[in-house]
Image (cartoon, rainbow, N blue to C red; front, side):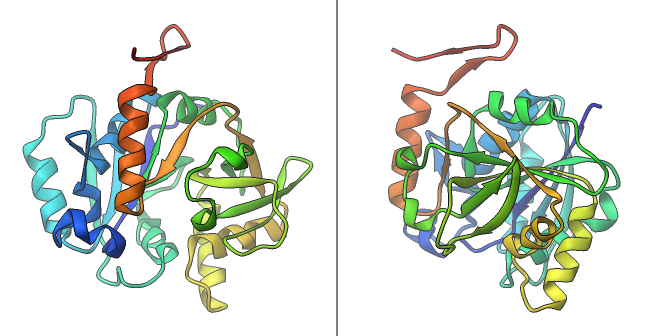
Length: 253
């Protein structure tokens, strides 16, 4: 099954990035001279998706204007406005419910990843009613562990997820292969007072419908602060060059 659709959550105001974004939207913060969101879109395109449903909120007009002036081959955009962008990110995801009826890739606008990792996730077979979360078991090598969302697995399933869970064996990379069942889980969590994406994932986990996909040696970074952005630039400049056709990693000198 080929997955062509990608949902990207890009609505937040990125408060901790304000020193660099000068009041602009975090998805346009430059990383090695290219806006963060453009890195995400190009990596996902390289992994095989082409239809991008992007939820915008804070200064969304600037994001749309930027990409309206960019020519990205093989990419189509569906812009979704979330006027309640101050709420949690699960609410942003729910605004796309009417647009997505088949399996899709779900990404965060501030999580950089390697195209080969997304490509591998998209090869996973997915059952109706299931969501697959790409997880990283290399806990000691992840930048800013305190801020990362933790995951506990049992038999290939995620059984708990959250930033403060007491026991965990992997980390949430912010990359998901979803069926539309995600939206039912988010609505259920929201009715119970939790509008976060992790709240929806906990709903799925409680029904054993959240599967873990280990990214192996793949690398990723959550660009949430100026320090994290500097770290991301170092990775992009030194390590993250890929040839998916050959299926090999190549590294800059």
